[in-house]
Amino acid sequence: MIPKAMKDQLGKHIAASEHPREQAVDVMYALQAHYGYLSDEAVFEAAELLGMTPLEIEELATFYDFIYRKPVGRYVIHVCDSTTCWMFGHESVVDYLAGRLGVMAGETTADGLFTLLPVCCVGYCDHAPVMLINGKPYGDLTPESIDEILEALRTRQPDVEEVK
Amino acid sequence: MGRERFILIDRAEDQPLTPDEYRRTGGYQGLEKALRQYSPGEVTKMVLDSGLRGHGGAGFPTGRKWSFLKDGAPYPRYIVANTDEMEPGTFKDRVLLSVNPHTVIEGMVIAAYANSAEKGYFFVRPSYEQITLTFEKALEEARSAGLVGQNVLGTDFSFDITVHRSAGRYICGEAKGLIHALEGKRPHPNIEGHLTDGGLWGQPTIVNNAETLAYVPHILRNGAEWFRNLGRHEKAPGVKIYSVSGRVNHPGAFELPFGTPLGEIIDEHAGGMQAGCEFKASLTGGASTRYLTRKHLGVSMDFDSVEELGPTFHLGTGAIVVFDHKTCLVAATLNMMHFFARESCGWCTPCREGLPYMEDLLRRIENGEGREEFIPVLREMCGHMSKAYCAFAAGAAASVIGLLEDFIDEVHEHISLKKCPFEHRVRDNWPLKTSSAENQKP
Image (tube, rainbow over all chains, first blue to last red; front, top):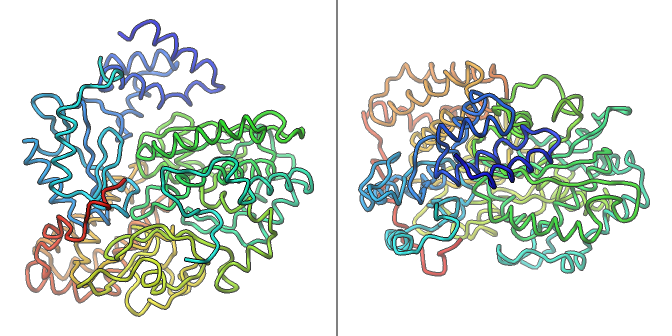
């Protein structure tokens, strides 16, 4: 269950808006940040907060690619696989990451740090090939730069907001 | 480049114009003028006369879209700045909003005044969190300067803007899908009729692309005639931000006179082709547009000139993705079809069922398992795509039509050789030899 303070805050946010449903994506993001993913419990809590049915939340949650209905790692790596990144070898980037992390696309590393996913064009085509990590873009990827990025994340202390 | 630029100011993407800097470029003068000198109808007339068209890809005349709003239409009315920008190859709105957020805000306020809207939404995709933060900061600055909010510039016109962070999916950039997304519904684009008659919560709504809105303040400040004359010729009024990526030396977003020829954009602005690469084809507006070929290098890159090439040619977003002679266009088309098959919202049958089928046929051809009879089937499927509910599926068919019209020999070659004549070159394209330390951004 989410803490009461968080529930109250979300409730206030929803009440302030003319159409509560408008806040559905924000609420899903908030619950996802709390649980690490949008758990079944989170779906029911979102439904209650927004005055929607759990099915209506499920319908949204499964539509959006930045809402996760299954557990993901602390760092979600989205590798762009659209036209320009494809041209600059996104397949090799995915292979390289898969090899370095020891996972296939769609899987999470055993230490719970990284999840590897494909994503469509992220709008940084001038820096292809590109990946997002927790939404932050990293462009002009090379094997060396990928190693550096992964190493920095592995050795980094979790930010305060990342501590559950 | 010595040429004056209006909305795309030359500076680093993490250094947006401050309000003072924006004012020094003439910022917020257009809004002053609109509110103090013109009626809402006169503003719409001016935008109509300027020839401004929708830069999100459809190219619909902006002034006409606004004039669909009937006198006496109910309140509240809404304005939406569409910054979903998910067309592959397109990144112009990202660069624009990174450097010049105030011009989009000013454009939204003027659009709201012209349409008597009291509320606006800035709809933005998740991978643009950085520009969302930049926009929110600029919005706060505009609010505290009295440019957004209650009684804008001390007049009796009030308008405020809400930022909506989306959670992905290409279809949210389609105006009607976007409306459902804002309403917290599954973003299917199934709304009957014009959004000006019934859009957000059934109320009159105008959805404009961020780049389109960015030009509005300049039209108000300098006049419709001035804007028209910025283009290269009569049919191409104004300017355009072209996003250039692919096998060029300097990929980037370039604000140029509308109607600049394709070859000139590539050679003079994007630094020409990379060493060892010959131009083979380019998209004009991301994955939803047909390939242009070598014979099209002189084509003026504006809505009308590209459409004059044939019934399935469209400029789209002006996202020029350049392919070289070593790139397999069957594989490129397959990549785009994979994108569309995955991004289809699934609401209507031709799109949901047709695109994976087309993807499968293309994949078999690329893998050397193709047969000649796949070609007429693909052609027929392209025709069916225009029967889908929204423009998504027809756009998805564009690259296939282009492949079958202009590069059919390449398709035949895959079939007769029973393999891709380009081997798996794409995998060999990484890591890029040209990348250097200074390139390590963003």
